[in-house]
Image (cartoon, rainbow, N blue to C red; front, side, top):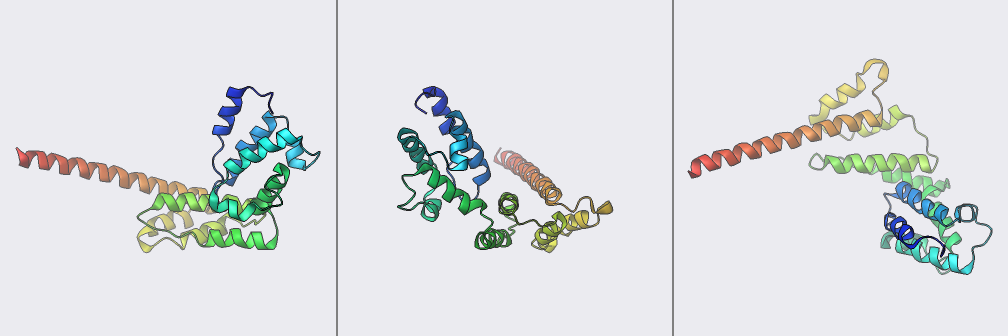
Length: 210
């Protein structure tokens, strides 16, 4: 890896986010690009042949620097902290292992995503992330079932969105993506309304002040 252009290497490393419990898919894409850049992708993915000492040290340093503290405690141990291929294997086991215990952990995380009308954006982000994780670990649920599960978490004040989804022609809109679209439209409408109210309030204040 020492033969890579320093500027390109720096840019590639900076583009890698810090791995946490929510962003594995994007993190994997970025870190794999680094492996490929260094000509080490096959060795890292397959776990063989063993890396040269210098390449191993560099990748260990990068991987460890790109893992959040919370995630670090679930992955790193004395056996893999100096082994880039071992670190990679442990990370994959944590995030995409199809072992029953991991599938249960990921499903429980999805089941615990709660809806808060004061933070709709958070619900959308967490639900989307959880659905991706379910697929990563091999938990395949029909889109309509996932959608019904998410809909039941919405309060009665969102019945118009629930009806728009569940009464769609041929059930074509009974998909998580359609639900998220409706919620984002609702969120944007709230932002526009808030902006208008703010402008009206400012105008009234100015008139009264004069």
